[in-house]
Length: 192
Image 1 (cartoon, rainbow, N blue to C red):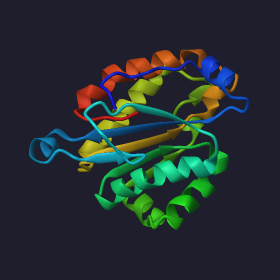
Image 2: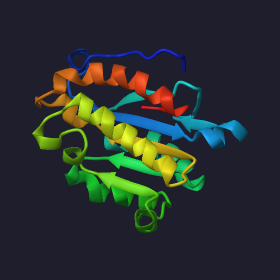
Image 3: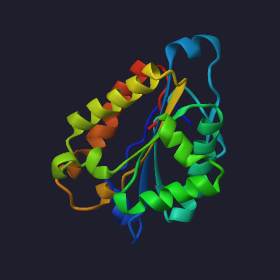
Image 4: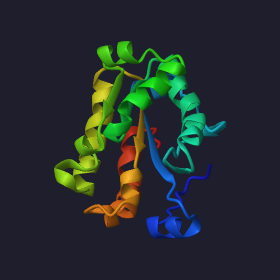
C-alpha cells in the first residue's frame, strides 16, 4: 500500500458495476506509549499495512466482505485491541453471528467494552443526515476513548452502504474521507 489515498467517487463506482457494491471503511489507532516500544504489524486482506492505514473497500457480497475482514477483526481481538463497528441496524444480529462463528467471544467483548457495535443512525446518519463535521468529531472521540480505556489499538470497521443511497449529505462523503486523512495521523497509526 502506498502513502497516498486514491479516492473514487460514488458516482464513478456506480458506473463501473451494475449492482452497487458494499462500501466498508476500516480504521485503526495505536497509542503513543505502545508505539514507542512495539510498533504493531497489522494485516488486511493478507497484506501488511504500513504507516498510512486509511482503507476504503468495496465488496460485491457479504461473503466477500467477511472473508476479507474477519481475519483483520480476529487479529485485533486476539491482541486485546478495541473493536468499534458501525453496521446497519438490520444487520446487527448477522454481524454478531459472523463474529461468533469466527471464534470471537462477542457477548463477553461487548460486556467488557472491548467491542462496540453502533447503528448508522448513531454514527453517520444522526438526525437523519450525514454531517461530516459531526462524524469526524465522533471518530476522534472513539479513538481517544480507546486510548483512555487502555487499548493499544482501536480497529474501526464501518459498513457504509448508506453512502450508495440517496441520503441527505451523501455528496460530502469523498470530502469527509479526504478530511479523515488529516485527522487520523494525529493518532500515530490509523486506517480507514
